[in-house]
Length: 171
Image: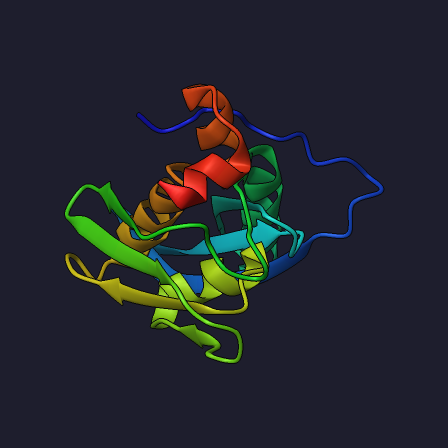
């Protein structure tokens, strides 16, 4: 069960955004074709908060602006541990499946395309990641965010078990 704790994007937060995909879409009317653009954007603060959004408009800049606004509304928080993730996790959305693993310091972000954008914007510096299912950017981004939302910090696990943080790592 993924946590549904959304985080409000406040004005004082410094958010970075990254364009993941931009598609030209066509609607065929009686009078001819109408072209518009569809943008997929990820937004994050680099400290464990990330969101994704989609926007469609006749102009590229307007579609990106709409996507950024949508992404700010869909921000989620997840635990970070020394620039990496606390544990290995699988994420799934539709046919998109991703696997993310913690990595030692100095490894960098080993991930492809849409996953790399999400992980870098989220503030993860060392991680190993693999996309195993669909290569559709929308599904890969949503599966990556699903995996990040399933992460639990060691402090949370220790408090749920009713033990101290030392006993968690000793056992």
